[in-house]
Length: 294
Image (cartoon, rainbow, N blue to C red; front, side, top):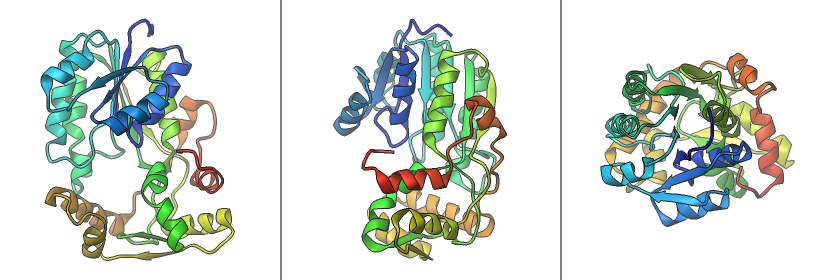
């Protein structure tokens, strides 16, 4: 796809969306970053974004302005909103109306797991995209390694513990979002990935017991783990958050404590990247040796 039109990156200053713009800029694309507040704008600008669109996703006029004149869109849904599906479906419709040529959706692996509301909310957006008439690429990343860095690492360093509310011995697959960003940039600037859906994961599955062993090795001191009751977890970590968010974490706890998050076939990601995907061990070693936002 020619990169003569700007590419809109939704969430360009977010925990995960901030990795997209550098990959696009490296490929010669002009990026317009869509953000919602000052801190996100500052982060987006620090990644090289010069054109900023400030918009609330529920404000259709602002979204239309953000979409005006762009040729491609990267869309990552806002996390844990009760109207996530409706927001996403409408965004897809507005993008199609704006004449967007190519749309890349960062969704979730196994959106058909209806037990978890943060998964089932992705399905209507995927369906809207398939119906939209735009060239589309649906990326389905598994658990994102950067969640460990963004939400847990400082506490791990302070307390020597990595605590979550789901079972510590159940195994899950993971992906480094920098690898996802590379795939997204390829999908927006090259041919070959349009009109397809791609599960993205590094190889294999690991438990939280495995992860703390990696942390201990990387830090040169013992890191332990334990499982906190979900009620205590919600009370400690989101005491003033809306009920929907707390209920979403109960969904996740019930599923992960029983099944983990099976997967770990890296064929798709390895093939698209043309190299081995980053592993959790790689990521933790980086966390232990750098202060950069990774």
